[in-house]
Image 1 (cartoon, rainbow, N blue to C red):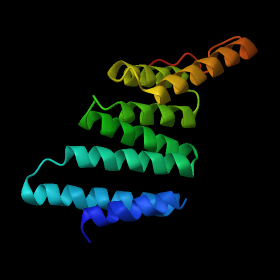
Image 2 (image 1 turned 135 degrees about the horizontal axis):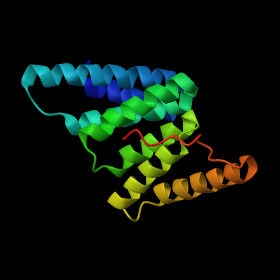
Image 3 (image 1 turned 45 degrees about the vertical axis):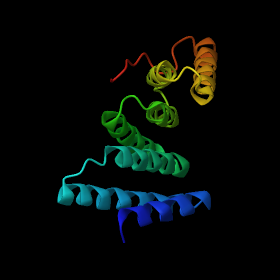
Image 4 (image 1 turned 90 degrees about the vertical axis):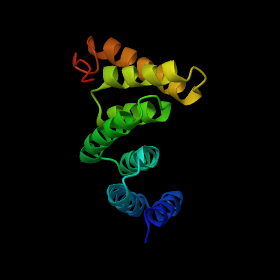
Length: 153
């Protein structure tokens, strides 16, 4: 199979709610794409960033701390391929939120997404929700919800 067939299988599995199967398909597609890139010397950065974004989405749907941690690293890889793609920054923010305790990092990623696309309603809504949640936690706990951690960017 070529990488696009694995990508298509991942898309179908994701749409059916089979996130583990989708993750496996997307990871295989990414491996195949990387091999193809090495063989023919082509630049497949755009395709890689989409696959990485899909891998992150799968990990977030599967849930759990380990998946969120891996999602953060893969979202950062996605951003490294193209830091001008708002969706990659939204995926990173989603992973920070899923991990918990990283509200400042999530807000910074969402602000970056908005700076790239001022009309991005998803990023705006996520930022508002995250800030409300953080403000609520600060009122309830008397401190920041992220323990004062600073950005790792």
